[in-house]
Image (cartoon, rainbow, N blue to C red; front, side):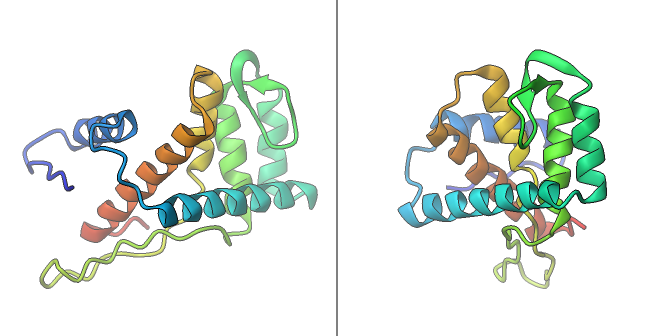
Length: 168
């Protein structure tokens, strides 16, 4: 199914509502098995990129991870390689930076040839998955399937946005 947001509406609010509805099951559970497998592969790949970047002590990921660990929060989220919970926003930045460091994780295509005269669309990366993982840790009520569904939703939104303008 498709949701079209009116041009004169609050687009951010509309996208947020779509995400809540998607993850909440409003559109059903019609996600093809191949999509589940692909997002699981992309997530695994993103984690391996992040862990590798930290293992090799790359600059930004290491600095951001160390900083995140100086903001302890028992209700927060973890950074790669630690069981210590810290401020969720710090964990997200640190983990996203680590995932992005190698720039070799998954791809989101946004090109849609059905939009006449429009050739926007590009590759995107799954460096936003740490947001989903932090939300799962902070809320404590998100299982693996729901986390993967949130990642699918995230990829779907980015892909649709990339159909109509560049996300560079």
